[in-house]
Length: 233
Image 1: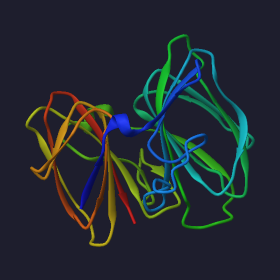
Image 2: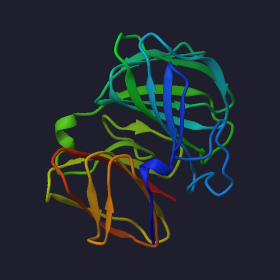
Image 3: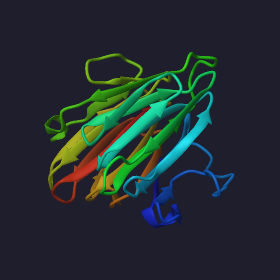
């Protein structure tokens, strides 16, 4: 089953320094029917103004992934880690038993990032952080893993049985994805438009929550389409 949630169904809040859209129940947005999809708990599409950001705050028992689409994002945490990342880089933080961190925009121009939260498969982990780099040219016509529980060069590690893929398609170009039965697929269109299995269409910032569909063909409907596919238990 493929359930499409259009971009305009997301919760939206503009705080001046932060313009944010929530795909799942989060903060001031509460919807008991939209709490999670498998272990996926949060997808926030944030635009943060220059030299502003999220002040130091705590997290526990959550895997937090930040994917920058435009601009730069600075991370600092209580374990002593700090990094500045942009497009072509991914941040992964395991909050585990407890960590404090901040995320700020160090530049003059806005930064647009996707922040994703996943429940870990193991509680009580020691907090950890990493920033990894991928080659954006390898997104073309392919599903490139950028976060996974299966270690590989350039792939951020995560404590959950899942993989995040990114892909870029031109109009009419397709990629196929096959997974084991009984798993879930979450799909999010960052830019452009796609067709799923010849029957469903998605536009910019739409998402799809897919179950009982282990074989998926994603076809670009516009040039320079960018999307994310997450294989979930």
